[in-house]
Length: 63
Image (cartoon, rainbow, N blue to C red; front, side):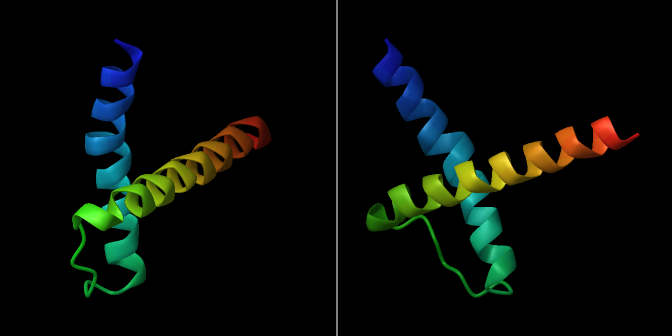
């Protein structure tokens, strides 16, 4: 059950965020969603969400 949930989160959420981040960084030249890029996109997605989440957390504390 947890494996299925992790697979869904990785394949849809984190991978989509990673794809968007890679697309933004490469100014739209990144093709993405190749079978070998799943781990890279999910990792970039996780890092992006972590950085944005931390930034929002710090911003809320600053207010």
